[in-house]
Length: 292
Ligand SMILES: Nc1ncnc2c1ncn2[C@@H]1O[C@H](COP(=O)(O)OP(=O)(O)O)[C@@H](O)[C@H]1O
Ligand SMILES: [Mg+2]
Image 1: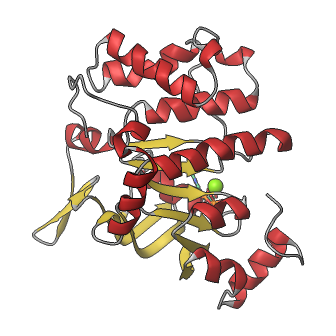
Image 2 (image 1 turned 135 degrees about the vertical axis):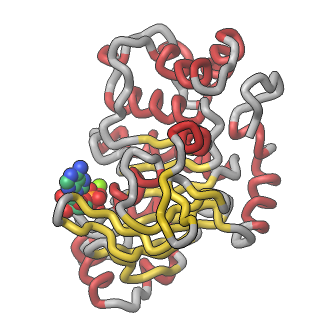
């Protein structure tokens, strides 16, 4: 994690030093959990969405969550992003409590300052882009680096320009989101998340709102991030070919619980559980994995 004033702050791609370092990152996967759910419960009123959920994601791992609508996938990502807080249990980031710690058997909420500090290590991209409509593209990207990380305007702009190049939008720095296509807006949202140099990137159905012909270009950018960085990725997607290609592990959810936890090859070719088989049949049809 670069410090706010670190002049050497680089793009995530640079940080990993290209494919060789990324490969080294793969080799060290499995050593330490960076996300850990311990007996997490999340309820909205009487609706218990997650109950005693336990799982972890190791540093550098790419884990995809699949499962039917309403199974709790978005809720899990929003909990990690601290957009929601668990109603019981604990989430740890790199061994440290995210929003609540257990103290003398009691669950105690952390201070907002402590929570914010951890949140800066995590980035999220949403299905609906969620760009600030009143800001230009470059203002969208530099807002948090300047105001949260304390980067200078020049430093933040230079980095934003690099990222815009990376996502193929060199000429859109001064455009407003409303003048961009959905695919372009989503590429800005990806650049905005990367500008914070996140250790964890959360992707919630980021291609679901896009026209089919645009989906591949956005997935291509995400594949590139996966190939050239060591960022831990927690992904929700219906793009099963993409999930199969980039994931180290796939978790099948139903009713807020993990039904199956497997490597992508096993999950997509020889799932164990009937619930998984039924879900994959519905998503993929009778054929093999999608054509993408
Ligand atoms: N803000 C909310 N208020 C009330 N219920 C919610 C809220 N967010 C999600 N839920 C409920 O939580 C359950 C899981 O939703 P979600 O995490 O969005 O599932 P998924 O992303 O797998 O489709 C659903 O029953 C949904 O209605
Ligand atoms: Mg969802």
